[in-house]
Image 1 (cartoon, rainbow, N blue to C red):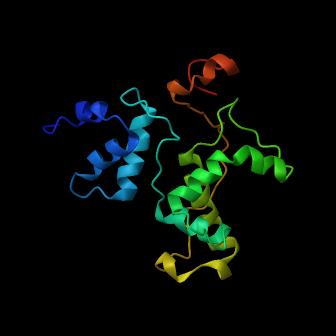
Image 2 (cartoon, helix red, strand yellow):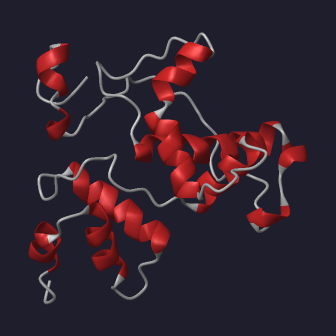
Length: 172
């Protein structure tokens, strides 16, 4: 608070600039800095496009290695951007009908998270594809357990989904 972080973040012109500001604090690395930035961007404090910037975490990088034989000249960030930008063409080419959130297509953070989930799932379902670059990660921390209570969804207000879906407020 003494560093006036909220107002300094609001003064940032780009998502990458806000990320660099968060990273400038002790003990905030790439992964945590990007996760904090995404969480703050869901608030009213920031309003960056979710297509502006991505920092792949270790799970997303491992997921990329499991999905693509090689990336060529693309960085991990570039590959995630390609996934997000070309999603409609690739769904169509594969004959897939993808249900988005009422017109809200997959964003960079969504593709980053999907790759992380691919890595986690494949560690258990296909352990033969675990590579040495994962620092010995062969298990997942938690297993899915279905709950009897209905899931309560919340969407960031800036997505403006309630008007198009008939949802009360920002819940589904």
